[in-house]
Length: 406
Ligand SMILES: [Fe+2]
Image (tube, rainbow, N blue to C red):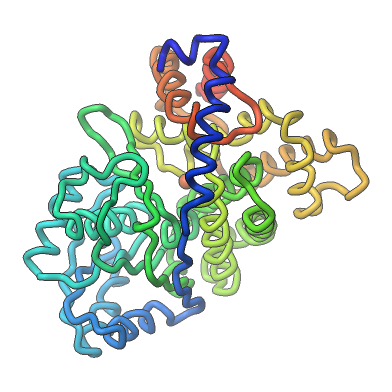
């Protein structure tokens, strides 16, 4: 890959790989989960699991949510409906292979007939991977990559407690390889949950910094999928809607975390962005963010927030018509404005939003000595897989990273 990145043929090889990948993705049927939306729908989903015939459910979450009392009402709803529920709360941010294997052991011990992920991206991703490992009787390492989930997982259900990852509707789950210090994706339509509940009632207590960072993850999904070469009319409409909803609601969600209506709008925005990017993919901001997360445990949404404005600066002219569409959607430009001016107005409005919700423009943990390695790994992830509007070379990626130095 290093040779490819340095080669003048890099952009050509990138395009050739993307053509193949696009044809493959376009041929795959992506099912849409049944969505329940509104306060109280998490408990409704639990009752529905009984109606669907499930009798033994593994609820996958993290210890913090369990301690906060968010999980217990769902356990009680399951038990009241006649479903035996075991709680596995051993998932930490950026779940590792060992954490997935522990969840697989818990699912087998409980003889689970379904898996319910409750939490942010990490518990939902873990739930998807645990279900896939049990269904395929394999270790998670065997699933890393594209389309490697050969047999159906245990049925997967999801209740997000943050508005950002979109994991409740996507075909993607990320597992951290601690030895390689890398986040590795498992991509397969079999990972798409059967049903999800977007219950803003579970998001009311989320602190403002977490609300801001996770909301920026949703926005990065929306923007990168909108600029993607894989985007179609349907995904673009979802991307534009999600972008509009984040700009209209994220500031208010950070300022008043108890506003249920705003929280519900953010939950839906995150899901719409999830639908868009699971088909249209993401871009360089995510490639950089994944490596910052693996190296420094930078929260995923924060890492995206750091990278996105600079990535948009880099591709502004190449992506001007799409960025202009987003600018019009959020009221930053008019339909008759020159696309380049409108694109710049969108990027300016993005930076203003990030300042308003208190997100930092630099990363204290980032070290100059790490930058060449981060750039190399980020581009290795992106080139050939992410349908970006402008091909990035290593010096350009390193320059973006240096702007993030504190
Ligand atoms: Fe993301």
